[in-house]
Length: 131
Image 1: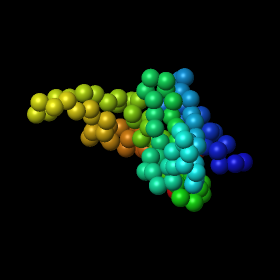
Image 2: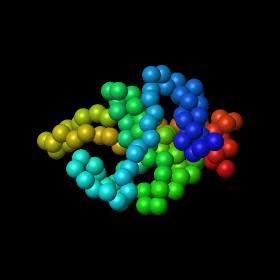
Image 3: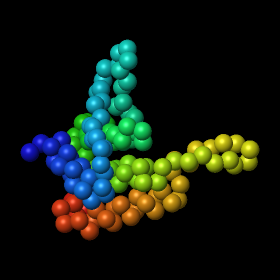
Image 4: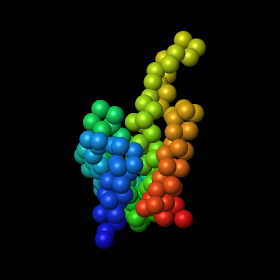
């Protein structure tokens, strides 16, 4: 079984645990050394994943940025817990000292991420990946 197939199975299990209906999972396709027109070289990028609240898609990079080795399943589960929390506690706008700021990552959000990880650890199938 390939690395991508394992992660798709894990995502379907997460869909059952967190009740993710109509969500789609994608893997991020990165270019290693080429930098042409319309193609970004994300070799030194820190973007691990991104999510679309409107389309309900979660896109994750499942390989390490530099050498393109498969990431550990524990780190992928932590990233998925973070991305799922974006849908559970969506960002909001707030005024602070006459400036409008968008709160994407805030303390209540990180509490939700920790709750998601605890829920994954309690699961029999996903708990084995946390060691």
